[in-house]
Image (cartoon, rainbow, N blue to C red; front, side, top):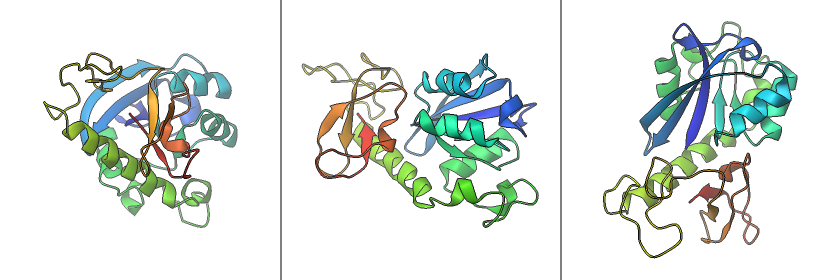
Length: 207
């Protein structure tokens, strides 16, 4: 899966609205596989949401964020984990290890019923994201090299993987149901793990 962290001087940017740099991180099998830094060009909420969504970002981990920016990101299919602080490495590892609710990661004054309620109200969201991450990792581990970069086969998507293979994931591709295995076309800007299977209603994962 791919997440993004706005940063400033090696730490999570205190206010997403004013952030100018973004770290994109690919995670496979709960391990950090690749990091890419990019400059944020758009300053308006909807333009910035589109700018981030075009890179297939599924989650944004950030500090403070205004409501309009949060709405724009969610409308683009990006899950938002806000009110976090610390060095990028500390927060990144907390996300991978499922420790984002650790008080050490929160901005001063954060509490469940106050400033962070919009972020944490759907508590199952974090579990769903991590479950989708594990599902994708298990699929990659069955490939010849175990990392999603196996040789191409006869099928249209054989050997493909987000981390680079003959057909690395991009705007195209398909989403697969984690329950019944049904496949539906991937829609750019709409991460698979935010969609439900049209057949059984279970969560989808990127193939």
